[in-house]
Amino acid sequence: MRCRRLYLTLVFCLLLISGCKKPMVQQQPVVVHLFRDLYSPYAHEIDHRILEFQSSDPRLPSGAPIVVQTYKDIEYKTALKGNFDRDVKVEVVILNDPADAVDSPVVAANMAHAVDICASVKACPANVPAFVLSSATGDQAAAGQVFLASLSQHK
Image (cartoon, helix red, strand yellow):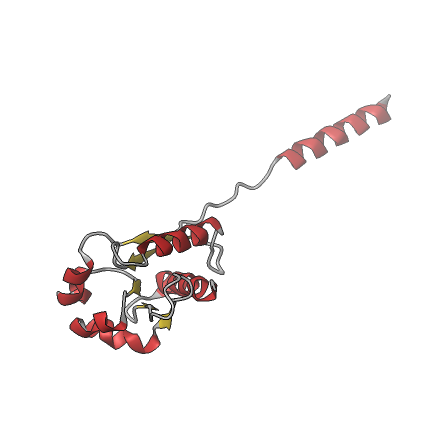
């Protein structure tokens, strides 16, 4: 009888311990702010690429989820002709055409490390430059690079 009581106590303790789980820590998503022309000939395809990227549950090596958010506060041409670095706070830029960078010194300075995503937006043989701004830092810059890499690989 005593052995049975000990056995039942042991089973109860094991069930109690196995039921206790360490709560998972929810990591805050890293938001990548994207500047692009919402009315470009490629806008619909870029929307699809963003949805595909988001549905793949992208994450940084730290495990933090990545969320892409399109910047909508200023119209495309107005932003490029204005004071881009002061008026537009984004990490990633997708231009309609390389010539669009001419009016903005900040954008033009970043064209050296732009990648062509024409295949991803089904715009080839057009050149559709995309880049992470050199002013972007930390997790937002890393998440922007992950996003651009996914656009570059979509062929």
